[in-house]
Image 1 (tube, rainbow, N blue to C red):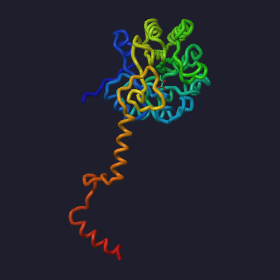
Image 2 (image 1 turned 60 degrees about the vertical axis):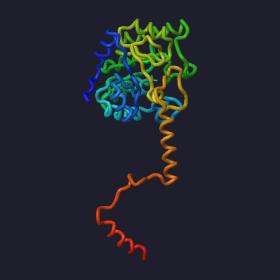
Image 3 (image 1 turned 120 degrees about the vertical axis):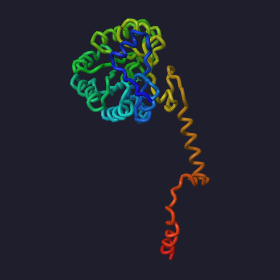
Image 4 (image 1 turned 180 degrees about the vertical axis):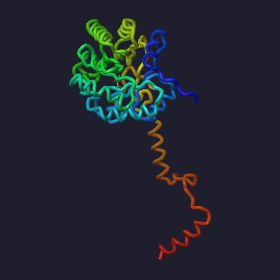
Length: 287
Ligand code: KIV
């Protein structure tokens, strides 16, 4: 199989100019990142959604930098030719510019990520600038920002009133002027997604931001039907892994209980002539 050519930030910018949509998916582990690379996705996000999709937390808030790094390392090993974005977890950048730079740098130094993503608009500009000054590619993330969903009154779509849409446009512009090279919009109306993608010269991707952005992100656990707790409106399920795996395990259980597993084909046999000698040996133990 021909090796996939890895897209870099300039390729992503070129794709926007040429009107080519970018395909972006989250991944948290080696097997799913291998599948993503084989499927030819353009970008992988090692999202802090791993807290809910992998660890079973109720939100992304408990996720730590160390957890993100371990998962990002596994993803990079599996997908050497895909643009990988590390997601800055809660309290890895809010505390100070120094923390922001140190933790963003860990994604590059320890996990060989190509960029980092962090949530927030105007209020995180000093952190964004500090990370950019360290030479790191930054992706902004505005709209529904799960780490601050408490302040937003829950996991609610944003930009549904003119006032809220204007705040998003201002945040998007402020991030662009600060120098972010990519922007993600989460859970906003398509008109707002399209307006921001048109307003900015950088690639603007959406997760639940409609069809007018420069590319789409989805969470792999939603796409393959693995995450069970809830399904956001913007998700399209392409498989039902939960059903496939549960049925496989039920069948395994039935086979073990009925004696149908293991079968002859699953057994190792003794080497030629050894079985007779083994029977002699057993006599000693039977006495
Ligand atoms: O962690 C994540 O997967 C994300 C997406 C929800 C945008 O940040």
